[in-house]
Image (cartoon, rainbow, N blue to C red; front, side, top):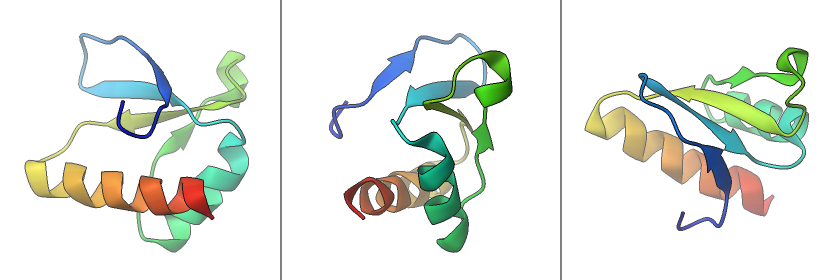
Length: 71
């Protein structure tokens, strides 16, 4: 929410975020050592699926996502 991104509510261990140019954000996250899953094959070309991790992993992801969205 802090980054102003939409998401699909989930009851599972993952969240799907609408990040816009998902392919580009995916590549930027990979360069930062963060692996997520693009879901364009599920007719969601602007979304990435992110597994919920430990508090430390989640913080690392959020930091990398914020930087990737700004780039």
